[in-house]
Length: 77
Image 1 (cartoon, helix red, strand yellow):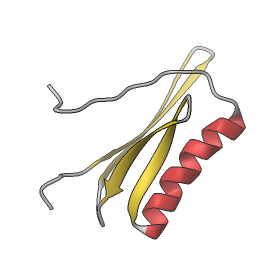
Image 2 (tube, rainbow, N blue to C red):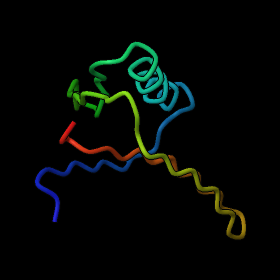
Image 3 (cartoon, rainbow, N blue to C red):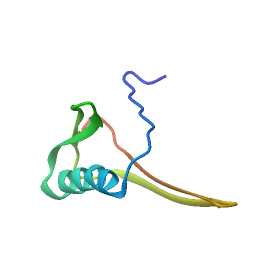
Image 4 (tube, rainbow, N blue to C red):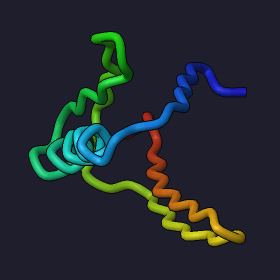
């Protein structure tokens, strides 16, 4: 079980999805902290390391497309 977990599922416009992706991209490009908007004016702040494990998956089932982009890293430096 995770020490801390946050999950939010909602329908986004392309513009809103872009805000999430742009925030992540800026965090990786600039280094340091990234603040991800979670709606209602809230944010989740994360410190990004120099290297991460990455997983990219595309799954098409019938008329539904699922794209998953997952980053994992250790907090132990």
